[in-house]
Image 1: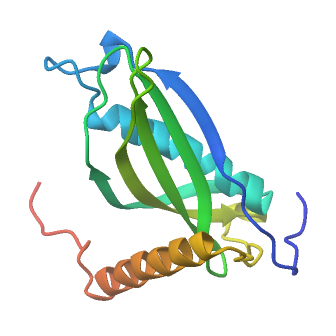
Image 2: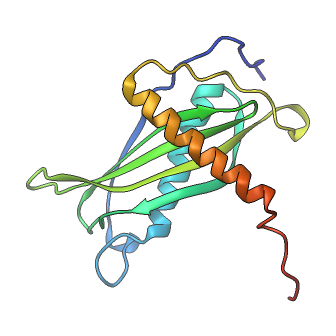
Length: 167
């Protein structure tokens, strides 16, 4: 497995395109949110692995906002890129657009962030490269992802995920 690089690197968008089929939809003819989340998780994993060149695992899903439905028959465009890096973790920004294949009308349907950790020898977290932020858009995405990470740390500090007891 390659050693992580000390020099900062940029992150490119990972783009995948799909078609919304009936087996992906609820009775209203719109995609199940869980299916959209599955696409986001897979795309985010590719973005994270391409960035750090390590095996990665999903550590948490952070805010995911379903803004508009995706209808059966529409084109689904998923875009994911690393927006923030820590020592061993990365926050991946995902945007999902729906597109009417006849009219070409596109709209932002879902936006969210996923937290990934790079895994090295022995199955332990391993360092990732620092993200090189170049454009104004990348800086805004980095600031948003940093707030997402800070919210995650506050949640963990409150021990919000301790078992409540019972079966």
